[in-house]
Length: 332
Image 1 (cartoon, one colour):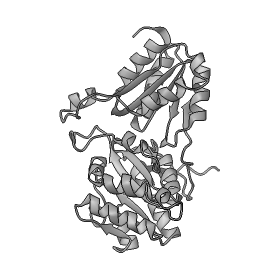
Image 2 (image 1 turned 60 degrees about the vertical axis):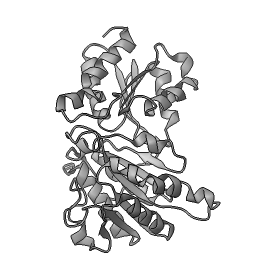
Image 3 (image 1 turned 120 degrees about the vertical axis):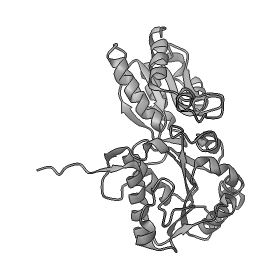
């Protein structure tokens, strides 16, 4: 008789990944504000301080730049730190260490050193946390050579990508959408890996390719179900990794469907959708396009506190449906 599929929440999957990595390698340790007894701002670290002790689950001061410097230094000395920011917005305080140090040290020292550092960023809107605690800044980091940037959209990928990130010899930035922490899904017990740099086709289709990230993957899938009732067959690709981008999967899909829509929560201008659009425009898929490339991103404004205004500032399911209709049929 088949065993029932085990389900974990996104947060539980991340916690299990960290625990398994710490059990397997004594060099792995955790850093961050309130990750010890409190268990993390979003309860991701949970009881890991009780299991592994304060020497390996370290509460840092409210000083992101200094703590990031400690993490970079520890990685340079052979440790494997996993550093949690309370909110992705607070990474702005540590950009010098992330962008000028972690990302560049291997290059500047001719490959003599590596920086096996993981940084975790709770990101995105939907919690009423307002303009300084709700941003999606992943495209900033994806612009920097030397950094890898991932955005898991499911509990399965959250665990597998985090374990791959901890294994990686170079710095990996993981952006975790806050609305996904309670989402449940199947997660194997073993310590498996999801490859960094490989997108996943979540739904096959023939009329339109939607490339989405994080929570927008789920909104795109919901939109695809609505569109299917109208006879529009949508392929949904979960990008999973912003740097490196999976060019082959994207080009192959758009070459088949002949239409592309990029959906992401970060501000539309200069967002990840612009890079994907340029990639397709410069590829063999361009000559097969039957419609202009579409982009749906965040509004050109700080994120509002008011819940209705907050929703209006980022793409929602009806927005995806309307744009897809326009691209496929020329109507809304």
